[in-house]
Every structure is written in structure tokens, then in C-alpha cells.
Image 1 (cartoon, rainbow, N blue to C red):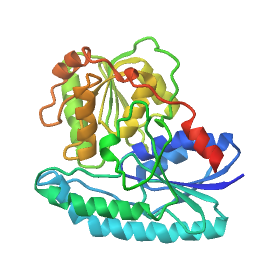
Image 2: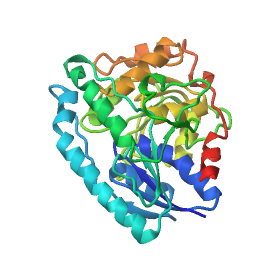
Image 3: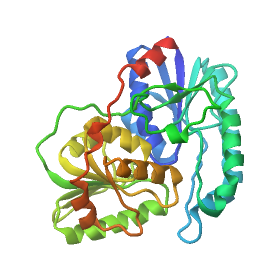
Image 4: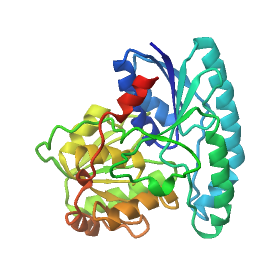
Length: 348
């Protein structure tokens, strides 16, 4: 048995949700797991695994500006992010010593490693592709990312080597191991339809609230049956207005059930969401978070390959998106390679 510390980034909910299959597999093999995160990501993990110990890590609290360049806003927050990395590194070092931790698995938290434990970095993005005037910083940022990963013994990439989506975001300068697409869901076939569309709203503020407003306004006028999940696990909200139901959070079981009852999933093109929809073989409409290069990249790739329809938030029109989505193949055309995660956990 190993003592394993799982550290999930608090940048949206995706890093926490894709840790769920890792935690389940570790428990299946009899390992002792401690969870560590912050913000809504931490709340989600505590709700899914109330039986496990949980430690609060320093929060990154990223913010995107409503006006001006979102990339510029993030660059201005870099000193805060670097301080957070230092704080989480100090805390993880203490946890490893106090709890005799054997393995640290860090999902995109660059400070969560220790020389006294095997440290594994989980990421699907080893290289950034910032566009526009800020692209001049790409070489420096990517060099720093490569340097940061060298504190870890291994890098795991949640992607399938057979039909990789992340190739453009990886780099040959960092050796890594594929662990397959990581989803908290498992496919059990389609259920009887309940919703025309299920909208999953997520991500940092203020863009999360802006997206929620756009979606709700257009759904009310559309006459379509819909479930809207606002991505706020720390609060309770259950509303129904005509054909539209609104909740702040669903457990993994509830989320899978609702998605299986929906014709189309409307969401951000976050990588964890994509992995969930691959598993459930769903049709989707993706609306990338504005000026998040990674989400824009995945949305564009899936659109160009006829897998899922993608439209930017500024020009989003629900009726158009729903009509177009029917002509796309759906995420089920992408196949996973089973057993990769279990193989790596056995190797621990």
C-alpha cells in the first residue's frame, strides 16, 4: 500500500473532475489517498469523496477582465501565481514529512512536488500558444514550463495515443507517458430523452457569469427543454422556469444521468469536459472561454474534423448552434485505449 497525495488545480472544475478516476483506481488497488485542492475544485472533491482526508491548498483565484486583454490580465497576476506556487510547495513538503507520503500526483499545480516522495505531474498541455501581441512571450513561457516539470519524476498525459488530441500542445523536450482519457463517467447507453440541450457553465469569473447570462437569455426565447448546470458546487440552487431547469451542481452520478438524457451538450471546450463527452458518446456545441488559447485550440480542432460544432461566445446564437450540431459526428467517434491508467498505478 502507498500513501498518495492528490493535488488538483482550482482553475475551474476540470482538473478536479479528471482526478476522480485516478482516485477511484488508487482506492481499488488499496492505496491510502489524501486530497488537496482549493476553491470550488476542493468542494467538488470533498462532495465526491467525503470519506477521504482533505487538505486546503493556497488558492490561485485567477480572474479574467471584462474589458481589455484577458491574457494581459493573467500576465499581471503572474506574481500572485508564483507566490501561490511557493506556498503550495512549502505545504506539500510538510504534508509529505508529517504523513509519510510515498507519492504526490499533481494536476497542473507546479509547486506540488517533493524530493522525499515520487512526484507525478498530470497535464495535457506542456506548451502554450498565446496569439496576438502577447505571443512574443511564448518562447519564454514555454521554456519556464519545461523547467518547472523537471521537479517531477514523471509526467502523465491524459490522452489516447491512438487518436491524440493534445499533440500540438505537447513538446518533445519533456518525456511523458499516456494514461488514456480520464473521465469520471462510464458509458451505459443512451437513456430516454428528457432535455433538448444540457448547458454546463464553468470557468473563472467574470466569464462564467457572462456565459451563464448569454445561455439563459437565449434558452428562454428558444422554446427548448433544457437543464443548466452553473458550475458552483459550494452553493445550492434549484429553479424551474417553464422548460428550463437550473442547478448549481450535480454529483458525478447525477451529471452522467442528465447528460445521457440530453440530445446536445452545450459547454466550454475544456479538456476534461471533452474527455467526459467522449466517454458518453455525446453530440456537443462548444463555446471556448474567450482568450483561453487551449480551449480555442480544442474547439477549432474538433470543429474542423467534423466532431463537434464550435462557436465563439461573442457571436453565440443558440438556434444556429443547435441546428449545426446535428450534422457533426459527435465525440463518440474518438476511441480510448483502456488500461493505461491502471498500468501506471500498478507500476507505483
